[in-house]
Image 1: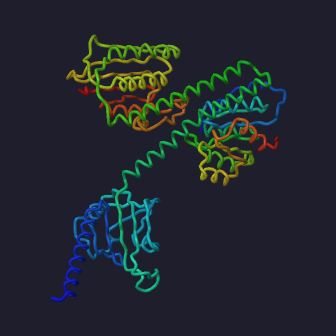
Image 2 (image 1 turned 90 degrees about the horizontal axis):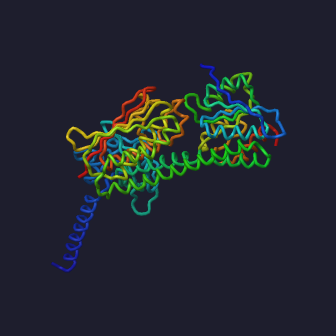
Image 3 (image 1 turned 135 degrees about the horizontal axis):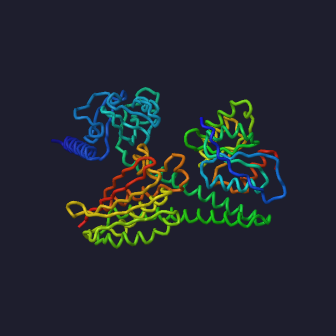
Amino acid sequence: LSLYTEFMDTTTPPTSTVINKKILIVEDDNGLAQVYETRLIAEGFTTRRVSNGEEALSAAQAFRPDLIMLDVMMPRINGFDVLDILRNTNEVANTKVIMLTALGRPEDIEQAKQYGITDYLIKSQVTMSEVVAKVKSALGLA
Amino acid sequence: MGGGATKLVNKTIDQSLEQERLKTLINNMSDGVVTMDDELNVIHYNGFALNILNLNYDITGKDLSQLMRLINKDLKSVTLEDIAMKTVSTTISRDYRLVYEEGDTANLYISLTRVTNGNGTVGEENAAQGFTLIFHDITKEKSLEEEREEFISVISHELRTPIAIAEGDISNSQLLYERGGDPNMIKSALEEAHKQVMFLGGLVNDLSTLSRAERDKVEFTPTDVDFIKLLNELQHAYSSEAETKGLKLQLSLPKTLPTIKSSELYVREVLQNFITNAIKYTDTGQVAVSASPSDDYKSIIVDITDTGIGISTSDQAKVWEKFYRSENYKTREHSGTGLGLYVVTKLVKIIHADIKLTSALGKGSTFTVTFANLD
């Protein structure tokens, strides 16, 4: 497994309130990942962004996020596999996870719940403000 | 002969005429019809039933559940007996598939009705007098339904992602503006939102071309197409797009080309798709377009060659699938919808063009399109 990681530079947020929480964004659609990251930085979070399952696993270990926003549909190792491995890895087993699904198929949500996710969101059915609200509520900041 | 006897004879004639009518009706139905006793042994059947079952012998007296190998939605084997057991009055289903000896399958519409005598109810003695099965092959309808469902699901996904990104970018710009954030960040978020909206516009355009193409399968009149003029126009239209990526869009044409009859609109649409795709998937080098007449001077061959990322052998077969986008990590950075090539395959069918692809991962691709003269 390659430990190749290409983390984005975290730029200074244009806000005075810095929140001491780290969020790992795992999303293979570059545009969507970028938009989440821009917003979370603006909201005062520290973020990292990766685009596949392998990078997600190594970033979870190295970055130790408070919360992972995890896409389901990714090439090779998908979101469920990542979640399964995370839940079975001691150091990161309790990391909060918000699952991102594209179509919100009930079977996907059911499967994700079995793995113990904190919350899920159906991309495109939520506005950016709702995404932020879910993140904050998962971290007990709301 | 007394009046009573005449009446009786007339009644018998009426009855046999009635029976003939029914027989003719059943035999001419475009559904398979089989009547059975309560153990599913065949009493009557029509020709269409044999057609669907692909049998060519008399099935009278045979157990129909032995003659019909059925599978359900989950591909599990089901017998007609299973269905009959669960049938209180009528079972109608579009979910069973008939399995032929050679392993082919056909989707069936099945309507199985319990025939009861008078008002007897199931379970009582003499209640079930047998069954009537009406069925027909709905394979074609099913595959159209599936295709439509898949199309709608893929389309909604393809529409949703850019909408989500655009919404996010606009929402972020608002937030940044309210907080007096960096104007450059606001600018780039708005630029991204704009890009996504333009992309959606292109997608909607592709969809409307697609629906026009579906219609034109039926009606379309070929006209003269001047390839030299058309290719020059395309080079002019896409040179700047290539140049912004540092690419050269080269065009090499012979002095003359035969004028062929086709659809200028569709030829343009097809070539445009190949040229824009080539530009999109090439980071350095060039996109070269060349045209030549076929050996018999009846068709025109256009090659579009790029020095791009290429297409792996395993992906080549999938290139024509609707919306297909390679899962290859590197290629995912390009936000193609994949709808383009699907539209191309539809148009190509209408204008009887032929496409060949030569490519290897990392070695670039050549698409060769042969346009037929539809005169």
